[in-house]
Length: 332
Image 1 (spheres, rainbow, N blue to C red):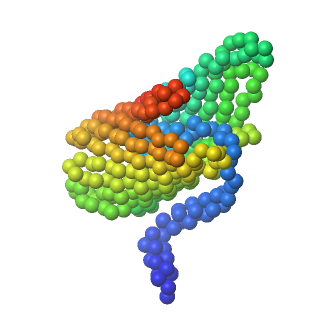
Image 2 (cartoon, rainbow, N blue to C red):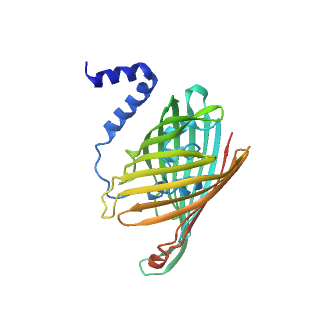
Image 3 (tube, one colour):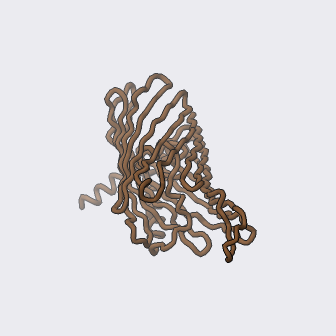
């Protein structure tokens, strides 16, 4: 008997639930993967992510996502979230742009967890001019994404799905608002290399993969598919140090590089009873641009406040300064 057949039989015997979840997952990916590269991105704000903790790690969160922001980063993370998780995030960008996110997840016992999320991006005070360059007042624009997610843990693995609807809203009577299908996210997460911490065994190595926006479109435009591969490692030296790396590939037909590498680290300085304080840093790099990130988080009894900042390295080039992120979350 071939070694591969022996391994397949051992996996089928050892992890039958895993196969029941993973096989349909990858069949779905194979069905939707042969897509053409998108030329126009209808919803670029979707790739900004959510949650100041993950932003402080430069978005290297595919293998870590364990709170309500898993609805954005990797729905498989819902398989290991708390019984109840809530996250509200906001960030202020240049040119009166804003980006807000709110999500709620609830565990269903052995049946997994579900999550709902709303992402809003908007621009206020856009000046309007007619063909003769006469000022016609100001209007606002907002883009919204509404998602429903599900994830379930299967031993040391978890799988998840997210479905999403999109809506474009212009504050102009002459412009027709649009709505569309935001696609499906399919995610997988795994944990390995367990060690004894206190009286329990905890995993130190984590990995994840997620394919996002499968089949998404808005009007005549499409939303490019994005695939993220992530690894993370927890180092226990008194308190926990987490190292994370993500490789992202965006399937878009642009001259700029569609591949980026994200590296992040988080160090929990204080972890006493129900109080924790962590600092974070990270870098996101592609062939065309590099950005630095930093931040911190305070957790008291499950209520967590996070802050992150993205560098202002481009300020002298295009006038864009540092971007600030803040989020408030609760896990019970």
